[in-house]
Image (cartoon, rainbow, N blue to C red; front, side):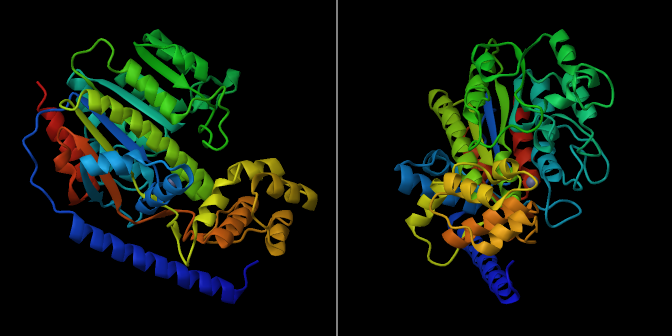
Length: 466
Ligand SMILES: [Zn+2]
């Protein structure tokens, strides 16, 4: 366990990080961004909304350095979208809290109004607004929702449903069935299957059968996805959330970029009015909640690969495409501090599994030998301090800022102490998020704006469509 003086030092350090970050954001905002007048651009035919759930500015910067120093690679979001397009900042607060959750932030981005936390697609006053996807559908565009979360998770749900509580999964799925998005890819099979087939629905409906009846093809594995060329598609690749990129079974589960490839194949098919694609990596948020920097970096790298595919599409249709990359909020308050070196990045690169997977492997009553073996095999270059090892064996939680799971918390503390990458929380923070915008109408997204403006710009652009 961390003693009081160590904890005080950590808190003091973290407070310092937060203040410096706020200062950086202020300078960034005032020096580099000027709010432009909304241009008179035409309606985009192809719209991409990429969302790194829980992905903050420092997350992107850490991944940028990671790519540059360890792989001699760039980051599409930074090198292409931000450099060739426009950069803005968005507020993230909810109607009832300075710190938002995904339902409220998703509602702001999708519907253009502030919502209370926990509420999906409904404004603070209880009214039910139209979402960007609903407007796109009215305009005859094809629409797609792609996520590594369950397809009915709050962020995609805010774009295509309206419920008073994010956990009303059955209602969200019913509303999807009514709206008929052309593409629905992600996890969450358990809320589609009837109880008799191991599902967790409150009724015995087989929602996969219901979607098939409406003309959807259905796939549940990576190989099946590669064979679909067009039409309407429901793809559910796991019972609940899809795996962290670091743990993913590459034979059975598609990556976010493979799902994006499928979207690029399927959505343009047979229509002259274009499409709106929402593409989310939820695992950037999940990794933050687990205070797991290695999983976060690999999730963000995969997110950037997916953005890269849309960028290639944009290059073929620059006069007709709008490509947006943003987030709903930051998770974890992650930042390097002290004097970290590239060796610290290398040590993070050596981590082989997510902290969630490590906790799963060790189970409820791990022996000291099992803990040693796990660290030796999957966290090369790290030394697990005796007090942290004891907290795993005795199932003692470390408390804030680490995640509640004792194994994940101890391993997270080990990684933080030996890389100088620190967290202030295992929850969301109130940091503003960036929006990177490229293509038709992208100038509207410059400047420091409210997150509800994001949807308002999309409404204004799509409204220009006949
Ligand atoms: Zn979250």
